[in-house]
Image (cartoon, rainbow, N blue to C red; front, side, top):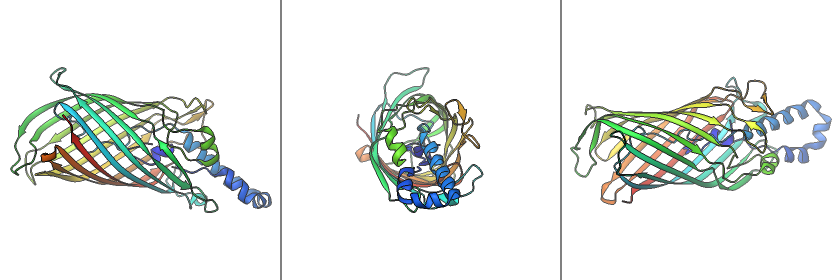
Length: 354
């Protein structure tokens, strides 16, 4: 897994967490390393571990979706701005155990996401077409060992674009609460593909010397299928279950000849609608199904195959007078393999322009 994948995001996610401070370690502790060769090996191995983690490709849309992921909104142009904070610590190995030599590891990413979604009036097979663009800017700060200072990098993450088709099977009914938007009761399906474009802030020297990066110089092709089911009212005004399944295929990082193994991720949410409010549980799970490789060889000992389950809550509140809505979400990881623990908070304002 790479640093952004460890950050889970939204993605926002936003991808895609370790700080490789090998250069600082060597400068600050060189006499100690000479005196204790076993410590030298352990620290060098850990720095190598961090460097390999950072070399992996950007994760693409891990955890980007929550409510209504199987739906496209009515025709129009929509925009959103989101502020996100992600904290990482307690890096886990392939068995899910903490790595003692990395106990001081910590990383924090603060970012702003701008999103645009266009849904034209034209229909295709009685369904809607949508084009989405996500742009990210922010700062990542962190350290790997207790003996080193924090380092920070500011800039742009790799943007994400998506093209999809959606169709709704069901009925639209009015809410019993004044001012609330109509409710789609039934099944919505959506199919499409996303693409991470590797033009974010990236420096091979920065990765090797400081172990912090926002861009990852790696294409990610991510086809997906999604669905949302809304029930008749029984608790509030209807329960919604949304699922979105991605298959992420990463191309080789041409600067380092590092290849990230293919990865499957599932975003999910179970929420209740009560007038303008929609609130409930969300989460995302991802699992790497191929080994990471460099120079054509799998990374030892386990191919750096990543796995993580993250759970949290999501709440959305409609502001129909302003053609807008506010959305808050938070997640925390509960199962990790070859990634650190992560906690994320995000607040977004979404608005229809026309």
